[in-house]
Amino acid sequence: MHPRISVIIPTYNRASRLAQAIESVLAQTFQDFELIVVDDGSADDTLQVVRRFADRVRYIRQPHRGVSAARNTGIRHGRGEWLAFLDSDDRWLPHKLERQMAALEQTGRKICYTDEIWIRNGCRVNPRRRHRKYDGWIFVHCLPLCIISPSSVVIHRRVFETVGLFDETLPACEDYDLWLRITARYPVTFLQEPLIIKYGGHADQLSRRVSALDRYRIRALMRILRDPGLRPEWRRAAVEELIRKTRIYLQGCRKRGNWPEYFTYTSYLIDALRVVASDGRSESPTFTVATISSSFPQGSPGARVLEAATARTFPHWPECPAHPVPASPTRTPRDRRSR
Image (cartoon, rainbow, N blue to C red; front, side, top):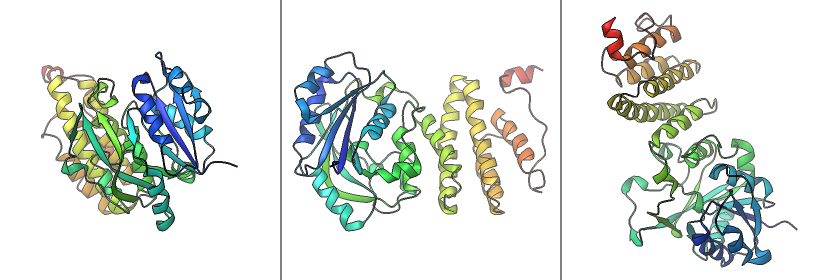
């Protein structure tokens, strides 16, 4: 008989923290689960730590491919109808699974997450207001940043069959990308009780090792905008968030003189124009072009590229200025002035 829940712990070179994560799962008051540890190519004593728990843990080792690949491996090997994740540097409180399964049975929903206790460098800290969590249809609340911790969720397997697995091409913000895809299709149950402890401040945290995280959130936003089933009001909110994040990122690119990256992310805004244009809603071009255009100083390289793309995307739109295609985007503004 298959267990009801497959609990998946992805880990990479965290032997010193792994034991407490495993122990917090095995101490659950709800015991109808299997525990899978996916070792993502660790070079430390991870295997020896897992062996201490004998046959209570299924151990899977793979070449180092990142946390998304490790979680996906666990999903594919899991036998449970429900899936839960625990990062190897976090810990569950004993009633987590019991409380969540009861809530899921009561609501009939397919995903549940909980509140959290945050520990940073050994001290408890309070989440900021922007990390506030919500219940129900929470897509819009997930746009600014990731408010769902992977360590807090229990998800029905059918959800992954509908929206797909973690995106293995993203080195970071893979959870942000997944929650957008899920919350665009499913309402979410939130338990206000803190049932996980998240530890931060250590050097091997992914968010500390990867810079400019918003560039991966921008990619996730572009992906969700291509979802034909996205509600019109959510599409508008996603475009606004895409513009906001891209504008901030482009300011950094200009400041550093990173023109290849500047034009790459300008192209994402152009793609957003095309996505909205394909919706067939007459108000979309006006809203999108006006909002995106405000992101660039008049006459700037990004504004010129955008204007040219707008003319090509909406050739029959009377408000669209027809501008020639600018010089090659690999040239810097100084190059063009000198010509």
